[in-house]
Image (tube, rainbow over all chains, first blue to last red):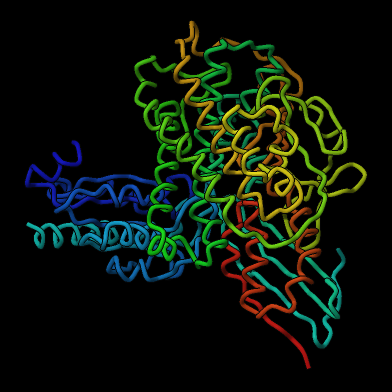
Amino acid sequence: MGDADAAATGLVRVRLFVCGERLRGDDAAALLAADRLPPDVLRLADVRPVGLLDVDALTALPEGLAIVVADAALGPPAGHIVIRALADVARGGVSPRSSHALPVGQALALAAELRGGLPPGSFVGIGGGQFELGAPLSPPVAAALDAFAGAIAEEVRRLAAATG
Amino acid sequence: MQRAETRPGDRHFDVEGIARVEGEGTLRLRIGDGEVREARLSIFEAPRYFEQLVVGRSPDEVLDIVTRICGICPVAYQFGVAHAFEDLFGVAIDPSVRALRRLLYAGEWIESHALHVYMLHAPDFLGYESAIGMARDHRELVEQGLALKKTGNRIMQVLGGRPIHPVSVRVGGFSKAPRRADLEPLRGPLEEAVRQSVATLELVASLDAPTFEREPLYVSLRHPTEYPMSEGRLVSSDGMEVPIQNWRDLFAEEHHEGSNALHARTRDGRVYQLGPAARVTLCADQLHPLAKEALASSGLAEAIARNPYWSIAARAVELIHASAEALQIVEDYREPAVACTPWTPRAGVAAWGTEAPRGLCWHRYEVDERGFVTAAQIVPPTSQNQGAIERDLAAFAPSVLDLPHAQATVRLEQLIRSYDPCISCATHFLDLTIEGD
């Protein structure tokens, strides 16, 4: 479904950016949670696995769509679920942590500058404990996957209702 | 450089907990009585795991595994594997496949260099903490950088199947060759990329770089007829030259205290520098005519060779080269007769090096008669550049001691970023402390 089409159906009101890498331990959490989303949420959300959130994906967002960014995060205890306003994440830090890509917060902040503001939306994260290549999910994250999927689903429903 | 005891009046520059994709590390710089007592960049890197992960794997499995070492240089890692095994197995690939490989390689350079020049390094020169602040005042620059990066991503998407970690590269060629019509949509963006790249060098040439000159030992690939990407002989600025398979004849890795990364040195113990400045300095005559002309017009060739801060200009030159060559390949493209040349494995040593955006990445695999790996050595560019970064920090640090603390910190961070190491931008976390009476 194309960008314009997605918004035009009147059903899809939210773009869900699923960040992470399946082979790197807890970094797979958002991808695995997205696999567990119920059908009603999949009708409301256009699910986009993106690895890392790219500024282009945000600047090219059609008007009228809200977004949810789901990702594993360093900082919160492993398995702990956090929901933040996009603006809070964008304010969270301007320091790039890699020469490979801009972090989520900086991608959001840069997109906000270029778009003239952020789209409606939220960040749903889960604290991760291990991110090494080939590592399994840490037990706390594995135990919290259903709850993480539930939190993502609730945000999609809430934003879909708000933008409908 | 040896560690030294802390003395009253010493200045300490510490970076703790550097995060990265390719590795993590810390920077420790100690200055006392106007002299650098210690300069140490410690890197804890993942590629060492990969040397074990690939043991027992087939060539194509190795190719898929090493692409995960790095999110922005996957093509360099993949081509290192592909060339190494093709060399060992005696595989001759179709010329059109070879052209496609250079196109994919150009995509990776465009993507990586655009990100670094505009998002990570230009803010240093223009006085911004990050690209976000720069976007407020120079929106057009950020948009130009993003547009260039997007063109690199598109090449990766078309040829590799996705923008990062391409899945189409095989030992012997590609799993599937694109039709001519598949490449046609790249033409317009590449024409624009050529224009944007030339504008990038003009922009960069207008910036002020800190004064710092030295004469490093440069090392890169050099090809007889083209700008080096994944083929050529290994050459240096002091006249060394060997086949790329023979990297170990000239260089060796060694352990350093406080880091699990191996540092590379020449066999006689010297540090050396890889990357865009090395390539531009050693291979400028092989640049695409547009890039060569733009470099000459900028008047920056000497500055690139001597001042690490001007590596931003070397990247801009390579942006022009990569965009112009990519456009040429798209225009001349003929579908190959065979997308992937079949091969027969044999036992031996497969070794090769490719020019990743930040410098030479070298591989060596010992393989059995089935072609399965029994031992591996992967030498990424960052660990080879580490010694040069430390040497430059030690040489440059005394010149910033009279600057305000924050300004001195920025200058040191900027110097590290000049090398575009995988840890470079994490030096925003630099926590400068001064100890004294």
